[in-house]
Length: 125
Length: 358
Image (cartoon, rainbow over all chains, first blue to last red; front, side, top):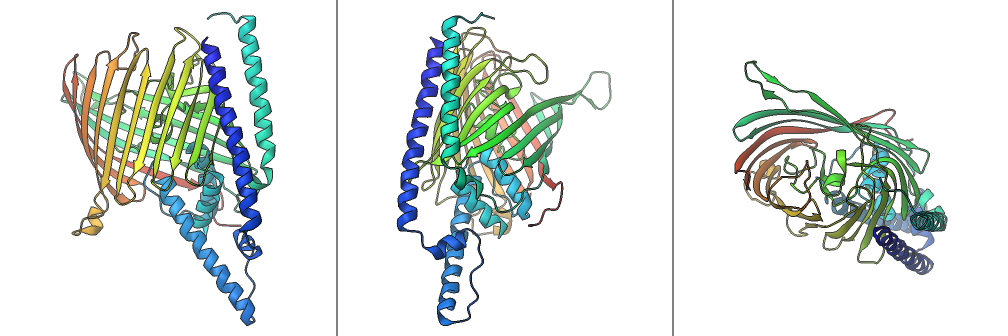
């Protein structure tokens, strides 16, 4: 009887997880196809913005800077929200140290992939 | 130990096949998203915490040095080898001897290999902290905990030496625009090799985190697969007030060996207008807890019904270095007592290689 409970619990968790993954995938694909612009995608992946050699490229650089600022603000918010749940938020560490720490905390505190990327970005730039 | 029947084997076989199938499915779904998560190459770390705690328990002084080193070795893009050991002592004055004396207790808290399969799933094997409730896994280190005494219900559901030996599936993901879900399911085998001993049990924990209101709630379940083959369950909650530097944490746990709860609040005085630089480093803490003895005896749990109130003050000198002081009063059928604690805790981080970006 006890094993049946475990199996049922396990089934429940995995089923819920599967449905959530599918729902999330659908949301992601809908969002990425409608909202993400090539400019934002390039900045989010860390590609340097073009040099402002003309008015249009100057606008591009300003937009990229605005996106960068927005990502930093969001990263700091996620950092305070996630890290502060268990301990006082630490000062910034060097990038490679932070990369290891965030992988450790991803496992330990089960932070999401999106939170991990934003926090890592905030802490290393 | 009871022998397996054919039905039991079928249950386990079904569970394993199901777990592997779903894990594979989940692992291959979002492969691309996971691999682009880290642009910076991680470096192995030697980190951990150290502390020196002095407590006065019923008037008797105890000196408690403790060191908990952690070794983190990232392997490629998806693997992490992590281990933590603890060396601690409880030194007291022996009759007829001068000074304080005590043995050093050594323990391997965890030694686990993690594989980040995808954004939704991490597979862990080895010896890992049992994910029952939140204290054992997330709040245990001396530099993290707000009060240095363990909650009375801590031993419920975490097994001997606070760890499991086996395998675990876990992860956290954004399930909705308003909330994240985190989960852990695990199986632990019986191990009698001290200090890496563990019980045979299986269980899980799931939680919902609402970032907007900074609230996390969740529950844990565990089935013991030895001795009385009983069930344990618990609930936990963490809330950080968005407008105040206030943290509230609470846990409830129930088992045949006992049940109880603790509620803890911590408030940073950073909003005070005077002496701002000093006051923002001060944290006031209060915890109330209650334990109700169960129908079965247990060594690490109190033998009788117990209530305990504690008040503490923490001072954060710099990042990672904290001074602590607390007073607690315990009311028990076995006798009431006061517990005073003073100490220092420190968290260290040492990269084992070049720490800058590549």
